[in-house]
Image (cartoon, rainbow, N blue to C red; front, side, top):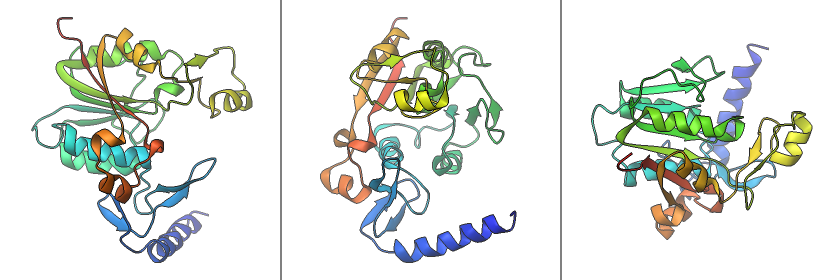
Length: 245
């Protein structure tokens, strides 16, 4: 079995190179072209995943946002906290950000530090940048997590906090613990809520100033088509500490 997995992976890579070879699409995460993006998701979404690095629509939007709208690649010596790092981003961000880049997760043994984001083990105002994407829907006390992310962010820092918005209003029920019932009600068996448009209110309750960006705020029509940026890219919530607090 140990030998079979790398052989299957190598065979898949060969198929991908043949099937997706071309230039109809461009992934800003791995900076590689493809004839088209691969289907992904449940239900399946066409043109969703980069066949080279696995980046999805939201990752491609974020890669463009990092480049166009932030100082992440131009400001030296930033300290960045990346919660639950995505494989398509981790090595690239580590190379671009440098020694100040820190990955954290509660369960993943491969991160730099094991961390419960409701009890972050770093002092106030430690990080210039925090990136936390599609994590809070797994966290029972998301309000405590937001307070902690706010606490460890520097006064002049910024945070990207993203969640899937799949409802008109956020709903949760802590009494639901059965995985099948969680999947039925919240979309996945390890989700504890569905977020709605009122998510911005939760961010503001944690004393964040919030700006919301969609694909049309970051990419022109040509870029959006080339990079497969659609409504499934979601929204980016750019957070900063409220001035004067």
